[in-house]
Amino acid sequence: MIDKALKEIRRGSVEIIDFERIKKLLERYFHTGERYNVKAGFDPTAPDLHLGHTVLLQKLSIFQQYGANVQFLIGDFTAQIGDPTGKNATRKVLSKEQVLQNAKSYKDQIFNILDPDKTTVVFNSVWLDALGSKGLLELTMTYNVARMLERDDFDKRYKSNESISISEFLYPLLQGYDSVHLKSDIELGGTDQKFNLLMGRHLQRTYGMTDEQSVVMMPILEGLDGIQKMSKSLNNYIGITEKANDMFGKILSISDELMWRYYELLSSKNLDDIAILKTQVDESKLHPKLAKEMLALEIVERFHSKQQAQTAKEEFDKIHLQNKIPSEIQCFEIKEESIWIVKALLECKLEISSSQARRDIKQGGVKVNQQKVVDEQEQLFAGEYILQVGKRKFAKLKVL
RNA sequence: GGUGAGAUAGUCAAGUGGCCAACGACGGCAGACUGUAAAUCUGCUCCCUAUGGGUUCCCAGGUUCGACUCCUGGUCUCACCA
Image 1: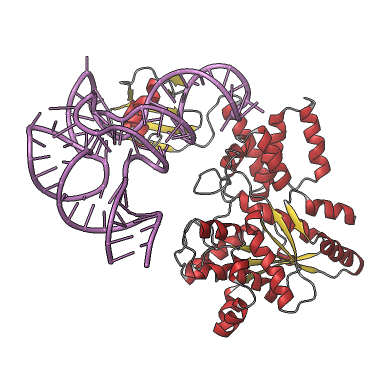
Image 2: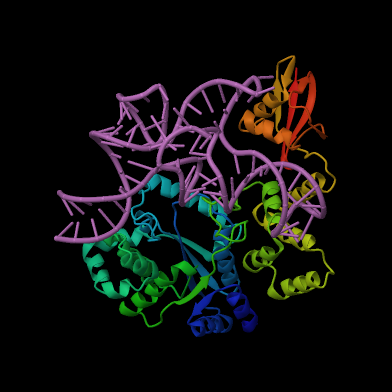
């Protein structure tokens, strides 16, 4: 039992520091039922979570199955500094309301994955506000500049003469202090968090805790392109509040290779089952598309419902296998005797400019009622039309 | 504070008086092939009812028949020195 648990805990992780401690915590839990604390911090600057964020949530959920109480930390105080990624040294400070609102939307979203009974949501401004100058000063005295510069991006920026704000030095210290305050036994984070996570261990030691937190580092999830990290700004993400149909379609558009990565990091299937799937695909006993469908179904179901996931799949097949029109398409009306096809496409928001519309027509990418449009001067007279651009954009237009 | 370099389409990046709506790369879109996979191939990629017209190359002026390219002033970025 413990071995299985440890295997699932290790799954997908890049590095674990002090694995022995985790083992002990689990053993204690299995023998005495005593729980332990697993902390993970989230930055409340973005209101929407995407699948990349759920890698950590997924792992937290596994911990919950094995006796963990999750400390879901919302870094509202630290958000004022911004984690030093080297990009924006100074970050816009969010208003209290914004932070609270984002935090609320987090809460709505995370309990699709986490067990609310085993989760405590905490804000670090609570104790960091209370720390005061004196406390802060004490905190800074636990570390020195040379060691701070060991951090990879500080080091790079320092060497290449880029600016490093003093406040940025505080970020790792404060994050580490969170672990002291919360008495975390384990902290989860992305690989980019390594320095901060280790700081937690350092500070717990200096503040006199007997056991330092173990650290589990998870990889950064690749986005839909399979290369760059999933992020909103790169527009290669799947938001967890997206509609079932979109989510399903997006997952099916990932590459086969990336699918296994997603399985490992996002699926709740256990490792053995996934290994069987992969073998079947490798031996051509299972079509890779079916494996991908299963993954898509699982993920859509998690954030919506079984029913919706099933509908999304049927809808998808309808459009792509049977070449039919989706059951729900946006409907537009226009009161003209006739309308020029290019205008119609603009009217239905299928195209952003008439130039673009003409190009698409010229290349055979536009269909009216399943028929390819060949004449860019075509007029649509009274009646109902299904307009289609490319493979996925549809609209219904009524000309009155 | 001093000195120097630079600001060009979504990003990177050519162009240094007309051949420029502006090379190229990436990204994106559409088509072919498919499993809306990957890979590959083709075309497109400022706007406009278009073999034409309009508005662009940080901003404001100027020189010129003509400026992304030259001049003046401004704004902003970066590097080196202090």
